[in-house]
Image (cartoon, rainbow, N blue to C red; front, side, top):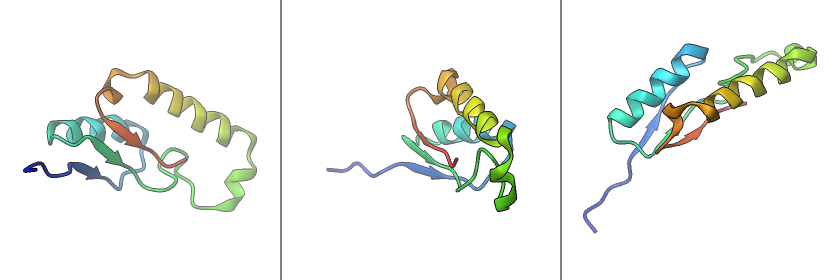
Length: 80
């Protein structure tokens, strides 16, 4: 068929940019948006994984993304 896949890959790691990168992806016609590893927690240091609130806050951000209308009509792959 004459259809081509439409995907959007971003390398952003700040809370407000999740939403803007998803909106950009949708405007460009993407059906799949791939974010970087550790996109939500933003940590690359193992020490932060031992902090009790890192997982809690990551799950809160994920819940907010899932509840947001910006994530409708697009598959969003976010890094936890």
